[in-house]
Image 1: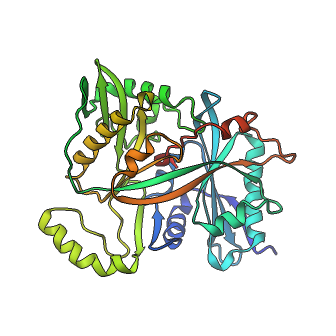
Image 2 (image 1 turned 180 degrees about the vertical axis):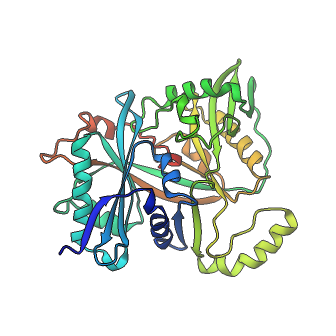
Image 3 (image 1 turned 45 degrees about the vertical axis):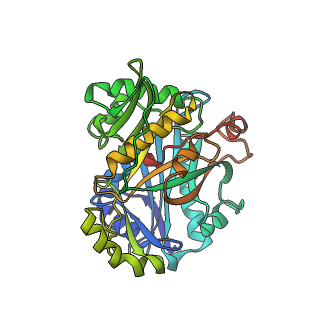
Length: 372
């Protein structure tokens, strides 16, 4: 009798899937768990549709000990919207981490790919050496992981307001509900040249869509001569997924109590206790006409000031390492992580489904981290 069974998950597995997410940690100077409460499947719609969740069960207990997710969404490739696949949520219980179970999960992923062959990509944190060592080295039975980009995830520390940066002829403000169609058009037009960037559709914002928790009023826009010339969305996804603090860095743990006392006096967000969610949001759909750095700086300052009176500690923005706008985000105090974008090649002969993969590797990828 085989030790593991591999199948697609159903809604009946939701509780076990959420438990699996809570048990796994991202280790570093601190440790966090990425959770999906109150529903794993409701949170997974951020990835697109369909979402196919593979589960590996211990045959003797029926418990889920491994997961992997393949989702399908629309992204820009070759300057136009195309269906692409995204791999995520690879989790294996530490007691079951062996090459055999990993190979079984990828064998099932391969069958899903062969039934619907699409250009496929994934993201891996650069300091996740276990994942990089297990997946990227051309291990037998696994697909090829082809490096395509390095992305910089900058967690901007909120809470301090700074002088606004005004530009002649530029209006900075929150968007209104009737501007959503114009925002979608502008973001798509700015991102079409960047491989793997999300191709938005107005339907994404309808109930059940991947962006249905993002309102038009969550966007900040810059307008010049009445036309949108820059956008940033402040997207709080706490109703769908969370990052829980499992362990602080030693210095942070020592300073947490005095910091929280001071935060109470100043009316600022507090550092959460261990096991509690970190209050943060995403800076999503960053688009600036002509990569205008002063324009980006002015809009970002306006957004930062508006958010600093809220309940969030951090605003997370992710840009390509060569993005000319990145210095504007690095100028703010915060934390930095590096995320690597890989194209996942399931072909037997080394020829990616993405026929222009080499061209894409020379272009500036722009994966939307809020949808990953």
